Image 1 (cartoon, rainbow, N blue to C red):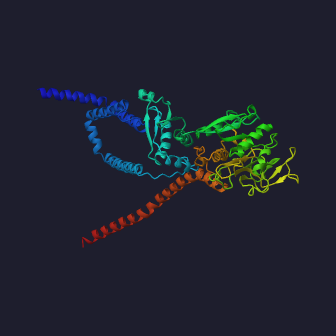
Image 2 (spheres, rainbow, N blue to C red):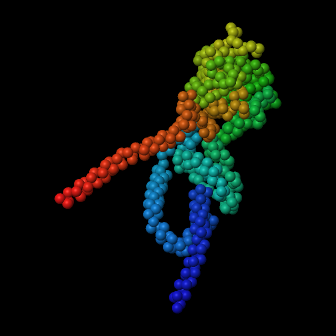
Image 3 (cartoon, rainbow, N blue to C red):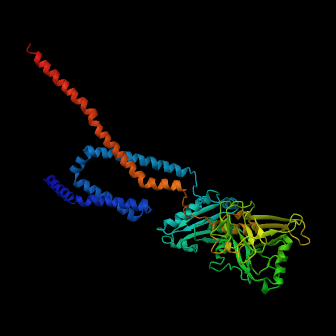
Length: 554
């Protein structure tokens, strides 16, 4: 009796579950898919309460659906179509399992291949050298909220490249939202990296090789080097953010562990500060005072370093103190009808003379809007001066001395003309003839090339930074410039473009149409090939039967 009541209860429960099966079935599938979406797409951890709730709820609802519809489930599973579907599902699962195993093997035994034109997924040789020469451990702490996976991935992709080069770098992640006490102990950047040694810490907010390498240099260097920008003569301002400003290149300098300061020599008669690693003279428009020229000449004579940029038709005459180094800025405006961008007075190049400064620059376009040429005077070799042209115009160029017309005549200086030059010599001060201290100068016949409006042109920014690093004897940093992480659009000639165009418009539809025609022809021919012999065979059988019937009575 009790068993009968129990069966009745079970029957009622089953009937109820069968009635609500149209709800439990779809809800079960939706809940399971929701849990998988949070885990696999949103990358929520498996022990996340919401994810677990979705998955467990889906399994429970699925079990209730099966309990309410056992006969339907059994019938469905025994159908031929279901068996074929299960077979296909098993094959798909097997394929997925193989792919998972291959990915696990690939993750454990990595072979990196960077196919991007700018090599944005590969550290430069200079960054590799920096981390390989580390003599103290560095701790990198990433501060990322649990929902910000995009920024975290960008940083960690770079950090993995550094950690593959050295064992001196450790890395961990702190979530400021879920670990506030631990994050507060570091006075963390809410989003970004904290790079620290026992003595120093640096924060990095942007995922770029230049920023991370610069931070590593800052926490491991004893004393930062100082770059002074000369002011007082309408030069480009390193702190101005307009098109004529130099905030872009000054920011890059700071990222590479340089201190950036300004220097007005008209306000003091003292020598140039002893902490000056490099003096940058960025396109003065007014003449320097005699006292300023004397200070600069004494600084360079004592083994100083200077990057001097001078625009055409400027009132500032910097040739006065360049005489000792056998170089001068030529008068006039460079015109190059062969190598230019937009206008022949905007000479450009992507091919450089070999030097330490330009060794990795071939292929990078540098643009010099409104530039002047640079010439060697006297016998530099006999004077102990090494004179190296870095950038030159074409042989068809010239220096236009007239400010009214742009047309080559006998008064103009014919090309090729040097637009950038590196000069190195022994210090001329008494008592320093042993070759210990060297004077280094880089001359560039244009100052606008490094302004905010043009510094992002790949060759411009790299040339400026490489020049400063060479002057500061930081050759390790040469060519660590900002990389363009944007995709490079492919370029095709007219024939290839037409093929791609017509192929995309007519190719795929043409293939589908052709396949349809082939199928139609095969189906039209198939009955004629197969049916004709069949009818002939049937006729032969009928004739044989008739003959047998006629023979039997005899």
